[in-house]
Image (cartoon, rainbow, N blue to C red; front, side, top):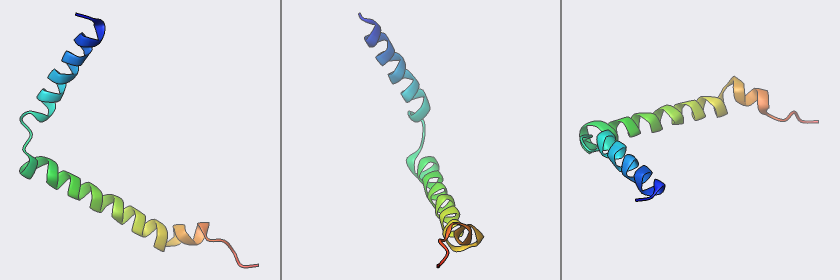
Length: 60
Protein backbone atom coordinates (compact mmCIF):
# COMPACT_ATOMS: atom_id res chain seq x y z
CA UNK A 1 0.00 0.00 0.00
CA UNK A 2 1.42 3.36 -0.96
CA UNK A 3 1.60 6.66 0.89
CA UNK A 4 -1.25 8.10 -1.22
CA UNK A 5 -3.51 5.15 -0.39
CA UNK A 6 -3.00 5.74 3.31
CA UNK A 7 -3.91 9.43 2.99
CA UNK A 8 -6.95 8.54 0.89
CA UNK A 9 -8.16 6.25 3.66
CA UNK A 10 -7.59 8.96 6.26
CA UNK A 11 -9.58 11.40 4.11
CA UNK A 12 -12.48 8.94 3.78
CA UNK A 13 -12.58 8.33 7.53
CA UNK A 14 -12.53 12.05 8.34
CA UNK A 15 -15.22 12.75 5.74
CA UNK A 16 -17.42 9.98 7.11
CA UNK A 17 -17.00 11.19 10.68
CA UNK A 18 -17.80 14.75 9.64
CA UNK A 19 -20.75 14.13 7.31
CA UNK A 20 -21.79 10.55 7.98
CA UNK A 21 -24.15 11.46 10.77
CA UNK A 22 -25.08 14.92 9.50
CA UNK A 23 -28.69 15.38 8.57
CA UNK A 24 -29.36 17.25 5.37
CA UNK A 25 -32.75 18.66 6.32
CA UNK A 26 -32.06 19.48 9.96
CA UNK A 27 -28.45 20.62 9.79
CA UNK A 28 -26.74 21.36 6.51
CA UNK A 29 -29.56 22.98 4.51
CA UNK A 30 -30.62 25.60 7.12
CA UNK A 31 -26.99 26.55 7.70
CA UNK A 32 -26.43 27.04 3.96
CA UNK A 33 -29.59 29.13 3.67
CA UNK A 34 -28.56 31.30 6.63
CA UNK A 35 -25.06 31.74 5.21
CA UNK A 36 -26.42 32.80 1.80
CA UNK A 37 -28.78 35.31 3.45
CA UNK A 38 -25.91 36.67 5.57
CA UNK A 39 -23.63 37.15 2.56
CA UNK A 40 -26.52 38.68 0.63
CA UNK A 41 -27.18 41.19 3.42
CA UNK A 42 -23.51 42.18 3.48
CA UNK A 43 -23.58 42.66 -0.30
CA UNK A 44 -26.78 44.70 -0.15
CA UNK A 45 -25.46 47.11 2.46
CA UNK A 46 -22.06 47.30 0.78
CA UNK A 47 -23.55 48.35 -2.56
CA UNK A 48 -26.32 50.63 -1.28
CA UNK A 49 -24.97 52.58 1.67
CA UNK A 50 -22.02 54.71 2.70
CA UNK A 51 -19.59 52.11 1.41
CA UNK A 52 -21.03 52.47 -2.10
CA UNK A 53 -20.68 56.25 -1.89
CA UNK A 54 -17.09 55.88 -0.81
CA UNK A 55 -16.19 53.76 -3.85
CA UNK A 56 -18.37 55.61 -6.37
CA UNK A 57 -16.48 57.59 -8.99
CA UNK A 58 -16.92 61.33 -8.82
CA UNK A 59 -18.25 63.16 -11.87
CA UNK A 60 -15.74 65.58 -13.40
